[in-house]
Picture 1 (cartoon, rainbow, N blue to C red):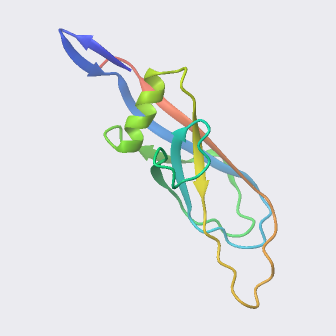
Picture 2 (picture 1 turned 120 degrees about the horizontal axis):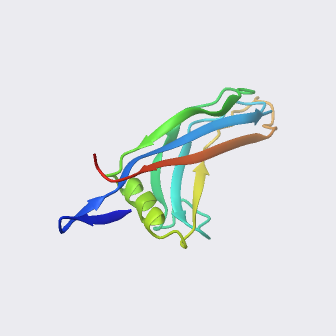
Length: 131
């Protein structure tokens, strides 16, 4: 949000973080880093110009689980991704999606990849007037 105090615009978004977990991982291979993007609802590809890179989630070893919300990514409110989150806070009728991209590699002789991975990402946005 932004508001006006003494005639000056003041941002009231103090912090943005993304809590994440992997409650289910039956993958038979290591999952390389996951790149995370924010984009308007309906965007399905990370190379869409509306998709904005947020950060990465480090590699997950095969079968590795992480409790929901146990890990966190801090989004700088002054970054391009931070500006997108602030836009969606200021415009709650505009919906957004979080896109995830990974580039697994299978080498000759490796078993065929299989399994299922559940990734849960929860935005946590702290708002309020400056103190």
